[in-house]
Amino acid sequence: MRILVLSALYPPDSRGGAENSAANLTRWLAGQGHEMAVLTTAASRDEELHGVEQDGVRIWRLRTPHVYPLREAPHAARWKKPIWHAQDHVDPRNRRAVARVLDAFRPDFVNIHFIQGIGYNALSEIAARHLPTLFVLHDLGLACMRMSMFRKDASCKAQCIGCRASSFYKAGLIRRFERIGFCSPSRANLTALAALFPIGRYPHTSIPNPNFYPLPQGERAPSDRLRLLYVGRLHRSKGVEGLLDVAATLAETQHFSLTIVGDGPEGERLRRRYGDAEWLHFLGHVPESEVGDLMHDADLLCVPSIWRENWPGVAVRALEMGLPVLGSRIGGLPELIDPGVTGDLVEPGDRAAWIEALRRVLVDPAEVARWRRNAEALRGRFDQNRLGERMLAFMATIAGHPVAVQNRAEQALDAG
Figure 1 (cartoon, helix red, strand yellow):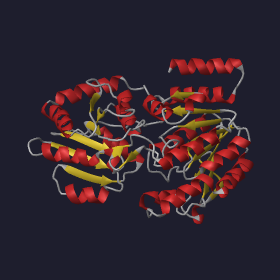
Figure 2: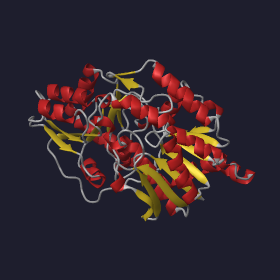
Figure 3: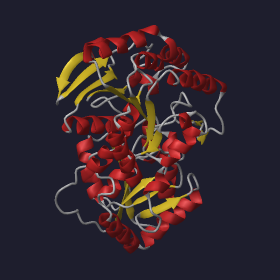
Figure 4: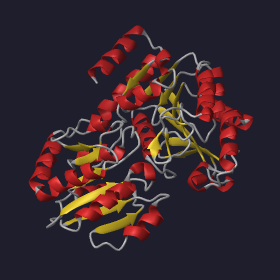
């Protein structure tokens, strides 16, 4: 097949798991013999690419008409954001840009990962060409313009007026498709979105992202203290400040280290508040190739999110390496962590519960060692080839291939 991938951010221009997962699936599909192309965004005209082949994939990287490029969204002036979202919904230039790429590549199938930033109204162009489409649900973007249903340090209890109007508009666009299906890496995200958006009318399933995580080589470095690790954006929704507060309290009586990998809007403030602690190391942004080495030498990954995480790739990667995970009991994390076996789950934002959970493992590091052995024994749960085959089977179902292929697709889905 000729498959066009839409991902508004795409490596090397990325800031999260959605775009990394888009790249992983694109490369895997290319490796299976499919002809792949990617439509993504550029921060300036100078960065644009028009069908340039990179590593066997044709890349269209376009500067969209938005008032600021998506890369600058975290730092954009607040007054610009309503303009940006209005453009993302209705600016006719979005549709024309996508039409030019469709004309140039002529795909048989479209795979949407992250269309906010390319323009939701571009969905009309795809639908008008009767192209079968897989919409991967990395977030709650169809129900929330922030994509997270999280605002002012808490999950939203309901859609605001703006998000309701946006969601109604997006549902109208989706109705134009003859063949479209939705896939979420976690059942929790699928359920949360189904309560807010009519995906139940279309084929939908839960398949973990078919990502490839190379295993580090060599022996783990020894340590005389428990090594805690956090990897991710430094944003309020991630609960990083709560983790640092808990760690600071425990550091008064316990011996351990905490390494913070990543950056974000909270980075500078958190470094000012905690950066001189002897037990703490801020590494900032680290290349993806080096994250595995840091995990290899860690004893426990902490994922203290207070928003409904979908399917955090950092936790998947850790478990595939045999690194136990202590995470919040929220979103898709309970689908990943087996409490008392490969880590543990703690109520999100519950300071006392996090102190108690971390104190237990600091006092009894043998518990963490047992979790590690269990996680190592379960390696392969998220094998890229197996998950990729399931994704292809679901794509075949959407495309309406002959009955024999559909039956194979259904069997693959049932097997998962």
